[in-house]
Image (cartoon, rainbow, N blue to C red; front, top):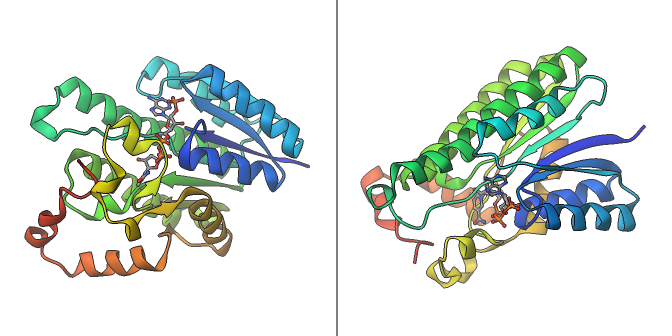
Length: 253
Ligand SMILES: NC(=O)c1ccc[n+]([C@@H]2O[C@H](COP(=O)([O-])OP(=O)(O)OC[C@H]3O[C@@H](n4cnc5c(N)ncnc54)[C@H](OP(=O)(O)O)[C@@H]3O)[C@@H](O)[C@H]2O)c1
């Protein structure tokens, strides 16, 4: 029997890599984002390349009313979602006080509220079934003082770790994926030049997703792609916050 994965934000970057690799490994897909044309093109491509069935759900995850049908799809016990990948996200180029509070709220809605609501809906169905997995795409930024984006990602990592500890013995896995700088559309959408962080810090989305799926299979609670980011995170844990703050400008220009 085929398994079904629901991926938010599969129209580019990390989500697109998840969609391809999951379809290649025999999953049917539910694809959730705002851009209908890109979603439909992707669904057709996944069908043609891998024989996967792909449903398209057009939803702006910053809009509470639009998340409702996605929550219902994730919770649908007649059509089980075996793997939820909460991946959709974006960052704001400017810092906190240079943004309107509405811009900050919209980012929080996508990075936190949508993840909270879809995780809640999925866990209910998965725990009742005694199986399922959730991957929440967080960020290494969650361990650093890098503004409201990092604060949102700290929430995602913490929620995921706690949920995995709590529901693992009920047959459900939750893993936080913590990318570092990754070549996707993320920085272009923010109008930030990828040259603002050193070349060695950039990761490849396909490799990152391949390693994340391997970490999920190994039962890891946190997936940090690449040795260099594993070392950086370890170093960050023992570095005073004031020193960490000197690197705030990386990847912002
Ligand atoms: N790239 C990095 O350096 C990096 C580092 C750490 C963490 N991350 C995290 O990785 C995740 C994926 O980002 P990415 O780097 O792959 O960026 P990306 O290429 O810009 O992709 C972002 C995806 O999210 C979707 N999305 C954005 N806002 C949305 C909304 N309001 N409603 C529904 N979908 C929305 C976009 O689809 P539509 O535009 O079609 O709606 C797109 O498919 C994010 O959570 C990001 O925070 C990225």
